[in-house]
Image (cartoon, rainbow, N blue to C red; front, side):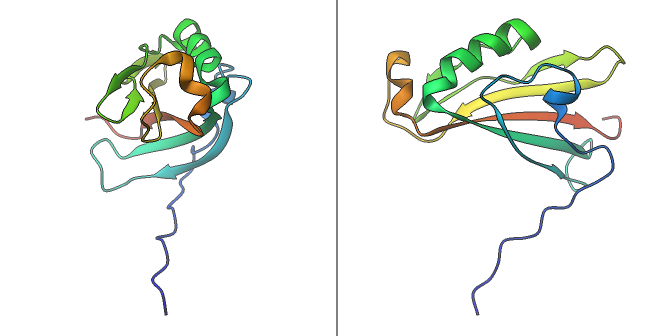
Length: 127
């Protein structure tokens, strides 16, 4: 019998954070939210998927809407360091965007990348 992937642990408060703060890009598809009680700060982590053909528009929107750092090429992917965003009720979020591994080395070729992922974290305890 093959080993199955661990079932994600969910927690109260986990959800589509970008929709909740009214900053969800048009082409971002909510993929789920997980609770990581074994990590520092016990974060809730929402993930989103974006097709490569919409990645540049999504990046531009997130730069303006939440202060996302511009993606840069490093090794074998495109990624941004996490940016901090505080919503209107005082919740803090760390937001980042990354491509899948790729040989694509110029922004003009992003449509060739199948998927980018956006990660939005918020912590359930002080660090």
